[in-house]
Image (tube, rainbow, N blue to C red; front, side):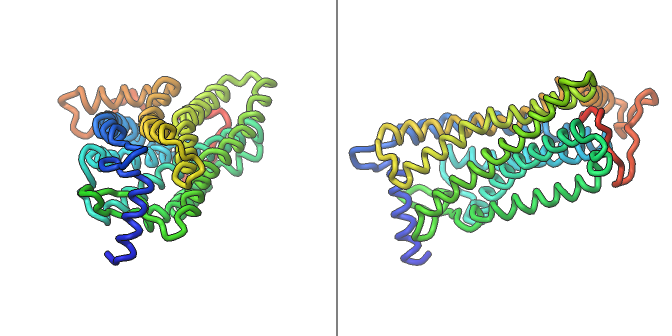
Length: 354
């Protein structure tokens, strides 16, 4: 590490962390650090198995039973993969919060990058699912041509490419460094750090909240208007489930986005009150934990609102888990897989997503 980098790290650590352990008056934050060390690790440890098991089951159902035969299936699969990216990072963050970062600079960059990719890809796929429902309900004729598996794959690849690209700052700026006898994994911005902090905060709030929310509000407003003029129960069931996925995402992520933006104002000196800064530190830990629980909830929504998904899960556990004679996890003759079409299979407007 060069002398300039060491100086930057020391300056950043003092301003951002406000020296949690050796902080001089008037703003000590030792109690905040103690709170995070006992509150966050058990919360992350709880989210990890729930998110892992639930989203693996979703992927299993979509690949083994649903056979990825519609554009909606493609989006649901990618959304489950996005949630798994969060799950993958949690054991590392859990240990970091309980003790310190011991995994080196490379994993510091990689885990931070994966976390950010998972965040952006998740919201983008939920937005695509809302547009998918909009086309299926409002523009039925056009949907017969546009809502194909091949287009779904192309759109998914674009989402992953965009998510990876806009998350590159996490890969560039996050570093593992030692300050005040404690190893951290935090972003170390260049000299003009205020601009980067504002840019990061605005990027997350605009691309991760405001813009998707505007798109979804437009889509669901038109969907509701269309459904009020028809009595197609299958359409309504499919829309209800996708709407629930969208609503849960915003309920669990919006508080964190708001607190993150307010904390950015503290970092750049707009908010300077010590008690306010402490309260935001507590709030960002609680709201981030709430946001992480989101990755466990989509499988729950599918189970209670998707009749086919519930049937597939029950059948899987019956034949692959509870039956000691099961070797190949093959379904009985009375159960039929959904037929798989080509990559050009068209989705119908009345399909049940799961």
